[in-house]
Image 1 (cartoon, rainbow, N blue to C red):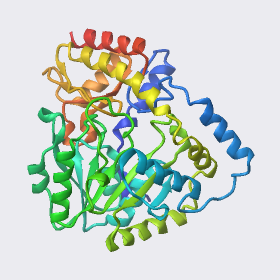
Image 2: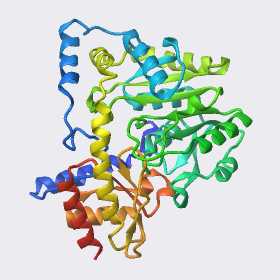
Image 3: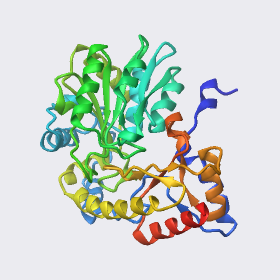
Length: 388
């Protein structure tokens, strides 16, 4: 009855939420460390943002908007990218999406079919591989090296390119590892892509959440065409508003053809949330991300230091985003999913198993460090007891 493609959809980040909810129904308390939602972790959306949303609805922005997104927000994004990331865009280069998730669907729908491959970082945020599978293509993962702060292994990346490769994905800052790539590495990746005439896609949703080192936007480092993805869910504490964007930097003829293919998909879904777009346009330079970054750095420092003091675990300290990706060095568990399930059952804490981000995540798990220090202390106490 069902199309075959839906039988292969997997999303490890939410896969074990069902069992966790059943535990709660039976009276057990569960600490959710699996989903990167700062609001559910206790951070408050600013009064300025809430007022902007209220005022946008009150001012009548409740209609179907433009399929490519409201002009006021596209102009605001052009200014933001110029001022923050040194990326030069025009308003025509920007398409607003329902979060980055819809941008990934549009990208995959435009480029991927049964004859194509997507070159993705391993480990990788799952929607990229899942939508590649969904549209009949094959996800191919290049290794990111844990021994080198999870930077891409460029030798491995080269080996993974084939005649079927449609695009090369850079996620920087990275999900799930929290790596922030050096400008030198990103430039070399662009050179490899240019050599093979690959489309470069750069996911930069965590660009405001960098704690160490310096983030350089991919498009700011080159004249080569770059398709960028960004959004407001994380840094602006509005994940439920579902507003993100695609942009086409240094666009050439091929990129313009891709943009039109994506616009066709945008038209048939009508438009993103019009009220939220107007609200975000009015708070885009509010500086909320600075307060968030300062607090998250404290939580990261505490959590990573403590994890590295737990017997049987070790982790690279993430330079950006709000995830930690520890390695399970204990030999007690055969695989990382069993570890995560076992920890959930015995200690009531939900992580995401590393294999859910591809084979390069094997024997790891992903956790956020979003909750307050008191909650992180509880998690560490449970981990120490569990590992002992």
